[in-house]
Image 1 (tube, rainbow, N blue to C red):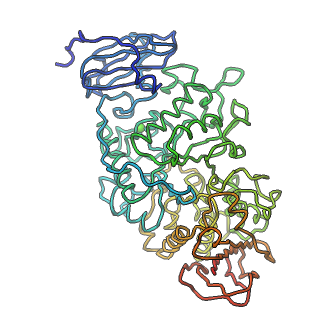
Image 2 (image 1 turned 180 degrees about the vertical axis):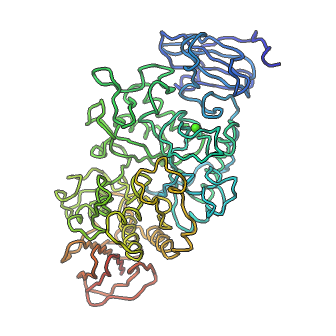
Image 3 (image 1 turned 90 degrees about the vertical axis):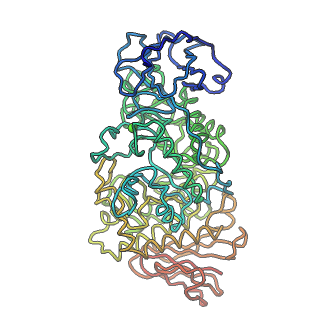
Length: 638
Ligand code: CA
């Protein structure tokens, strides 16, 4: 029936006032009318194709769009289009169907994101939209996960229907695990609609990290229980967020605006060829992403797109923060405009590097070295990461954890949260020869993430013939450094259960057997989980470990003299920062032998020693000599 409806009531209208607020509001639906708007060059002849069903090859109607401003096109249909699908084509009615596109700002799509879907967004299930504002991002403990890693394995004991899906994170068992661990933010790997998993073949094993965006503003379909139903992914994503929020856990989205899978097939190119990317002088695409292209955040439309896209996720899905992939490809001005456009407590951090040379002045890019120019935006610190585990360039090389001297200043750089500190010799820091933050909250402190080997694999690769007991000691030592350093701590999911990836470094499309968490490990290594949880609780209880400003760190953190390499000791003035512990000493010993550190006189209570955490005390030191067991940490308090 519907195919024979005649659109006699169809009228064209000029931009409404809503349009002015949102440059990328490509579809404005109401039961009375739907307005399509597209940013496309003035030379284009854009049409909107309407389909009655997602799988229809031929459109039921094709509507010509009218120019409503410079490079801006629009058409309004005065009918209820709910349930229909649409595609734009800038080549006119006879345009190549391969150039059909749901536009750059589809809010709902059919399977594999090929067509936009016209739906009424379901209401948000969560009563309280936002969590109370944190005093400081230093209070965050971020847990980075991939949906499939986290829950696909039967050992997760989750209902089969939700394994590998958004809904797995809404399960009480998952929430209970996160709460027991104590993390208060989950960072989910790309969960916008991406290309590399075929949503029509979900009965076959497919795995991808998802760094190949298709529709930036729609949840990925393969993590929903029904990718054919445009509402399903939206509803389930929101259910996930609501359940996590209810448990006091924030949700951070990994966003990948810096590149697309390719140029020709991208929605950017199909709506405005040549506009959204950077090109070299010879006309070839610049490749700062290492994926064959890089977007041009400095251009008006791309900048506006990023701002509106993140605002969309915050407003519609109540996302609490963003991890910006290859942030070093984006320009500083754009990142600052994004930060200013979002609510104050939306935390943004990113990779302060690119994967190749960018066709834009380095000085104006959001590179790690330029972080001081980024207002409240943080970057990952590879200084401490590699000071602990060894360089990015060679998995077989160890560092502090392998007992190798020469990495102390790099770790101290992380301990102080990358601020200028008189006792950190910047000339000896591995990568940066100067502080790159205004405050420690601009530094993400970590030893592993989804990229590269996970911690246990790296320890096995870099330390010959390592035995399990040594591996566990070093694992706990590494995370003690992360969780007692100033800055914002970050853990890869599964480290708390000694996950491994069977030695695979770049597991972006490795099978589940490589990437999945084995939940039986929780039973095998209960003391590992317990240590992580206790250490996190220690950090949360004691503000001395999470000072928010550079000044506080400089005034209240000082390193104690040590007599040998691979030994780092520092004291925190807890009293000055409102901590119930007036003085705290942390010692990290990367050596294979016990070590001794001279500490200030007085009675010190041991609260963490050799893999055991007990805030009420494990013993005391009266003689000014602290013995730190081999390959372990010691924490004392007064
Ligand atoms: Ca997809």
